[in-house]
Image (cartoon, rainbow, N blue to C red; front, side, top):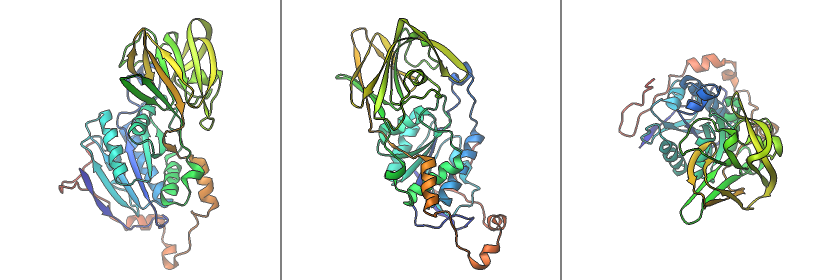
Length: 378
């Protein structure tokens, strides 16, 4: 059930170009799971998320977006962020009946796709973006980090991340110039099951499905990554220390681990280094198959998803068929070079201060399709 659209025209320095639509999906529980307690990761509060969304929306509208579509959920992150913003854009609040479960993100992504959202700003971790990639692999994303390990999303300031989204959504910068398709790890158990990972697929011995604690490095058996860097956090960091693999490189990395291997220290979670016995490490070409063997539990982007039997193996490949990911820095460079942020003088209106313009505009409010008001429940 979608919220009604309410339009404001309250220019605060925004660029009134013929723009596109920017969608907002904020995971209310990202950055709050037990792994943050077990390690030393920072907890992302609801108010912090609202603040980030507000900054991103201001950036998007300033850079040319003319329509914002946001997901309603019980913590009122996006709706709370948008309620008092004076922005020159249409705003639609999409009510997907959120219950604070992974299905919320699925329904929100499907709703955004049906509303022809050009660029999707996500607030969450690897798991949030993996869920979106599964249902909308053709999406164009600006992923902002709040999750635990955060290899796929970035820690870019939301103001400029939102501006990058607005530049792409408005057509001022072409996705072909700044938003390459990402790599995925596809994992298939013949005849019965298939899944994806954005960053890493890992087999863990003597573990169990659903375990949310940080992985024990001594239990790691195989690690297949689509990207890895020595400065990353999480299981993929091991590959980054052995054989870095950038997002742009048409390759993946496979690491074999187990008893008798060379001990390596890797940052497996925030504030937590673990020892991993490494047997071998090699580069895989795009599409080259790797067999992830049992008995083990298969972890995808840090989530233990499936048990693999002693006589089973999962066929995994790194492929470049994931969502487009906006390179924020490159996008802002192209937008600046094109003069997108240059503004003409507007006569007497040019003498008004930003604070005067903001104070002249009443706050925005939203209603669902049935007429009931969307309120901030926190």
